[in-house]
Image (cartoon, helix red, strand yellow):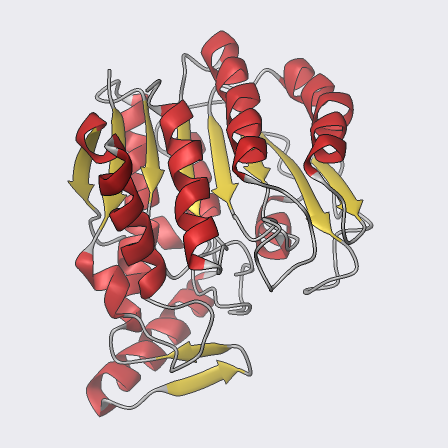
Amino acid sequence: MSTAFYTHTECRLHDMGAGHPECPQRLDAISDQLIASGLDMALQHRDAPLATLEQLERAHTASYVTQLKDFLEQVEANGESRHLDPDTVACPHTWRAALRSAGAAVAATEAVVKGEVANAFCSVRPPGHHATRDETMGFCFFNNVAVAARHALDVLGLKRVAIIDFDVHHGNGTEDIIAGDDRVLMASFFQHPLYPNSGAVPKGTNMINVPIPPYTRGMEVREIIDAMWMPRLEEFRPQMLFISAGFDAHREDDLGQLGLVEADYEWITRRLKDLADRMCQGRIVSCLEGGYALSALARSVVAHVRVLADV
């Protein structure tokens, strides 16, 4: 079976302004590198559908979904961008882009669980892992991975899923949503201290939070994964893996100070794919989070997806 690659042109239309690091060109860089590497031909390309409000409300409060919908639809109607916080800006295309991003994660989950594809990567934006149950922050509107994980559990009948987050920033929104949900085990490493300055003390026992200092390099991260993530994941025996795939821990990325390179992302993906092959019938859905140095982002995504696709 093949690897599905979900994206949509509307994800590119979300634009938070000139000079903003979370820019439409991120998706262009990924697409161009996939073509240049030849990997593009090995993937099953699928358009991301629009998420439904019901799907969003499995991870977010109904009041939050309604209020954000109203706000973003007003921005769409007025045609002028508005700030939700100093870092997070809504433009007239943000509402549909956010629905496409969450919709991609849900559709990918459906396709993988039904056996249509082996696994999937969602090349979407806006990202999601800072969006809490009831708050936008850190470039994020809806928590794509959390929405997908809850879909797998509440709709598709899975009993246990794991969320892996290797973004340089702590996935505080995902933690807020799934803390205390014993059906989900979340494993992450993140630079600390760094935005959003959380995660050092986990919110629940279903969290493996590993804060690491600036300038930590790849070999140290690999040792952390083997020592701290893998035993808990093996014990938990997830039926599916969800990955918040942030590539801003790359040494070329200015939004963090960690020292990972493409080979590290390849190694991490191989460890996770091996686990999924043994315990999850190979089921993996990976969703793009951070990564703002365009060349490093594109090269790292190709390294990640190449392992998923067995190419």
